[in-house]
Length: 112
Length: 113
Image (cartoon, rainbow over all chains, first blue to last red; front, side, top):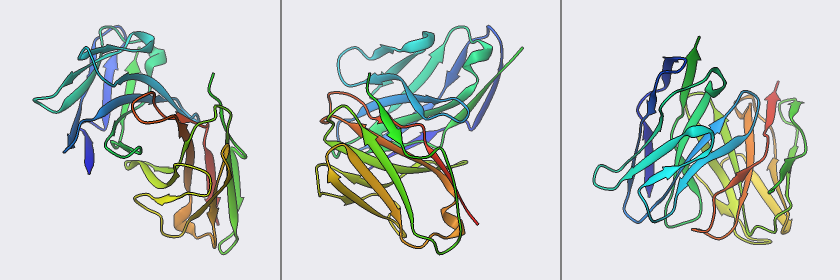
């Protein structure tokens, strides 16, 4: 079984500032890791994924994440945020079965 | 582009009614999933299916059932809706593990009065 912890439920940040959304996971098997974004009244959209290879993963909209196996983390970062990045962000892990386990989400609010 | 569609964006039902939520995907994916999303709880898996006529319970199957008669269609059934089933319901589909991620539909916001 696996679990995902998103350490911050709300992250307010000013426009053009950097941001990091934290995600830690636990799993007894090799994992695949994902970050999704959900804009208001919409479904989930994939931001980026780690399946194998380089531990630094680049996604859409200027986001990136780093897989750290020793710390069991997969933190999401963006060097300069925009108002349009305001949304809820979910970290997820896919374990030995095919279903995803999600964290509880982080609401990112970008302030002008 | 992968497309996952859900039959309704908003639905209002009364306690005790039988409710059907339909999901269709157009990418010939083997796997399909139903989640519910509640504030502060993230997404929780209700049921999933690896193939036609196959189903597996997720983390919170109580009060729900599913049907998968065709590969592209996965239905979630609330046999007797209750107010604690008021939620956002999200359907997803995916190819085999390790090849790609799950793709999500827009969601159905169900209110049970």
